[in-house]
Amino acid sequence: MPMPGWVANRLERERAQWFLWSPVGFALGSGIYLGQVNEPPVLLLALLGAIFFVVLLLSFGRSFGFPALMFLTVIAGFCACTIRTAYLATPVLKRDIRATNVDGWIEKVETRPSGGRRLVVNVISIEKLDRMLWPRRVQLTDRIARTPLYAGDKVRILARVLSPPGPVAPGAFDYVRYNWFRGIGAGGFALADPVKLTGGRKAPLPLRISTAVTKFRYALSRHIRRAVPGAAGDLVAALITGDRSGLDEGLLRRLREAGLAHLLAISGLHMSLVAGTLYQAVRRTLSVITTATCGRTEKKTAAVVAWLGAASYLVLSGAAVSTQRAFVMLSVMCLAIVLDRQAITMRNLAVAAWLVILPTPESVIEPGLQMSFVTVAVLIFFYQEIRKHRFRRPTPGRRSYIAKGLTGVTSVAMTTIVAGIATAPIAAFHFHKVSAYSLAANIVSVPIVGLFVMPFSLAGTLLVPFGLDQPFLSAAAMATDVVILVASIVSGWEGAVVAVPAIPYSSILVIVTGLFWLVLWCGNWR
Image (tube, rainbow, N blue to C red; front, side, top):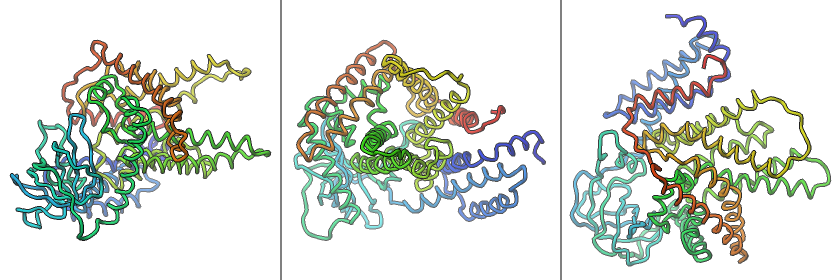
């Protein structure tokens, strides 16, 4: 049936926006695959993909090009997630083993606030289990924790190895799927203190590299805690190295209830603060020391230095998934500056989305990815609309510091409100609760983190080899104390956390689709 004329005309006018919808279709196809109970017939999907590819080639210049593009990207996402699943396939333990020796290399040591530690072990062998059934990795809780362990240690652990539990309720978070994509096919508990092993074959090269980085991260984290002891030092260490092992459970709870838990997830905020600080510092320094005007050269040099700083921060902070996403988005922005393009645009965001979800299509169901891209898309749309509709004013002389301060507070408030509205349905869907006073907490805390905590922490980290880090880390800790105070006050207000009933999947899909319809199209039909 032919498409109605007015719809075809609208789509043709917005042909430039079609590309922005391509990662949305890919993510939708990946999400559909992850929602299936049984594996789909891959050959049939490949055939459908080929058919739609032919349809897409034949549809350029015709009104059904956009529907064909969406069908193609949906099927591509479905097939990509199928291939990714086959590539990451790891055995999952089907029965519990009461006591067995697990030999392997330590990949991760995570100290728990409640005591003990959590170990991720790259398996070499598991007694009492057939070799074909060994999971690639095992996650064990060690409550004894006498022997110091570090990433890269070869150990033997007497443990009770358990098959992974399913979701606690229908539609709840599925730890089996989450761990399966990380190569973890079993869990359990250490029954005795781990024994370090020597000799034998060496650890794989990627593990040895990650081990060296991890040892450096934790050494830096310990140095920061010694330099500024207390809760503030623990929080500074978490912001710089991603090591949350020193954070008190009560502090974590207060941060969550105040809506400030996002400060701990090293993502777009932290990456942009680090890169932005370096960018402005280099650009202003070059503008002072150069005698001729070379604005473009300064911008490009500053962008390169900012990218190198962001890459170093990615490695230093542990390269969590949220940090990788933020780094990809920032890399696209820096490349746009070097190529004399506008840095923050919807098209750059779409490119970043492709770079993130194409290699890891399973991440589309993670709340971190959803909230990251929805937040950036809505903020780009919001500020583009403000620039488009604001009234032109005569440019007066230099504004007072009070006016600049009010403008900054207003910007933070508006950004927090817009981002909060955009991500509230996603947060409610995944976590079943909403922080009622997060606006008040973020208006105070985000500027403090941006203006004081991160710059002083960055300067202190760079000066550690020279022994000049103490004053800067102390200044960062003093600013962090204010953030902790804000979290304590706001979390203590009545009704700080509002519980939300379970939201149907269909409802959140309609909400997110409507949100993208609003921000990705340009015409009034949105």
